[in-house]
Image 1: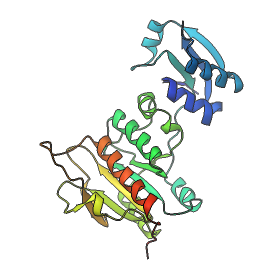
Image 2 (image 1 turned 180 degrees about the vertical axis):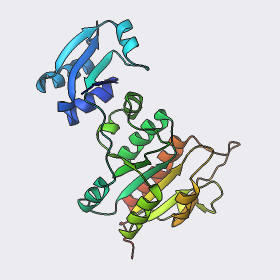
Image 3 (image 1 turned 90 degrees about the vertical axis):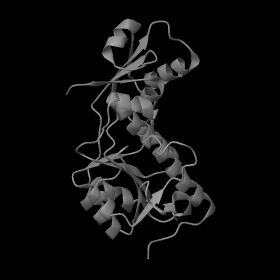
Image 4 (image 1 turned 30 degrees about the horizontal axis):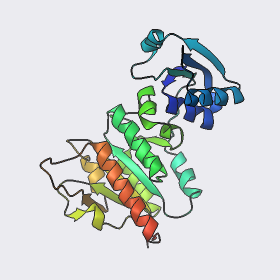
Length: 252
């Protein structure tokens, strides 16, 4: 089984905390000895993970991105299958919040969305298998550990998945610039699926047709839209705000 390289202090630390058996070796740049690196070394030692040293210029060749002098050899990334959604929902108490990214292909945007989804208490992030970013070292780096905690679920047919989730009692809320209702006026306290479309194109037609509600982010400046990861963070934390001040509602 081939290994992949994960880089960055937060991403490697998260793997050691949540999935230590996947980590085969941790590499540190020569001369790195500050407290947060020492904490990472202690964590690796506790989990009996080998630690090695390498020159920074050698590590620069290993990965594309800012590795912060920390790289790990790990078993391949795990993306959840569609069947796992039912299991997740079955064991979830309260009103679940799911994030759907419809056509988001940039790995940095996916990483940022995973980070926001975890911080806002989302149950999982759902993406279509085709024409979508997936878990890569770059995604894990940007996610700052969230990729090791929140499930990323790749589905073959997004429209069919939304239909099944609606049958389970979840409301589908899609974002669209031309919508008449503001995200701040939409009730997000019940079982909710929040859909964010690709930058520029927005949601695909079939995805849009499965939405129960369409909402927009009100814009006060000269720009007409936000980066998808920024917009996702705003919407997710509006859901979190509502849920923190109002009891969750259930779909009738």
